[in-house]
Image (cartoon, rainbow, N blue to C red; front, side, top):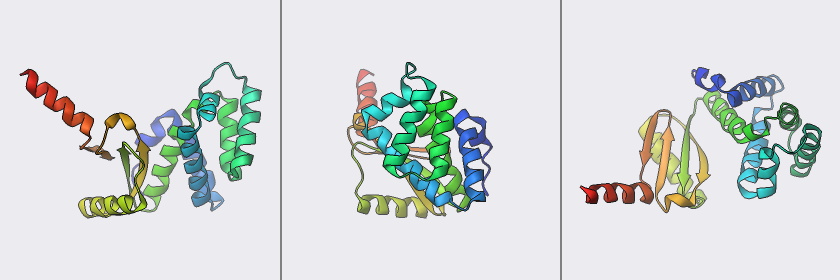
Length: 184
């Protein structure tokens, strides 16, 4: 297993590490990972859910009730639902996306995979994702799990981060480099 000390040093990492240990014990890592992926996707797609996780005016009990309802509606596994409840109790719901990312990294490390954080202007098609994974696997020499983010501000192209290595082929970065070069 890879060294996860960097993950467990952060607040979200500590929650993810605890959740991962429980998921391993209950042999439900894949279920929790799938549930957390659903939650992450919902956080980017739903402004209401995003507001729930970031609004400090919502009381702990109301936040806990709301995440329980969301978990039930989304059919999340019990461990993920309980973790969201703990995050609500501790007023840490804003850490939800970071917990999901850290958990995905722990799970892929456990499977012997490397996680690539990929940001694109639009959602990648399954064929694009498969081709990118194949190229990254050839470059890295191991299986690669892609954690996809969408950021329209990069205009086009991709940014790929694998460990400490960053590949930035975004149009935004190219335009900024051109502007800097033109200034002299």
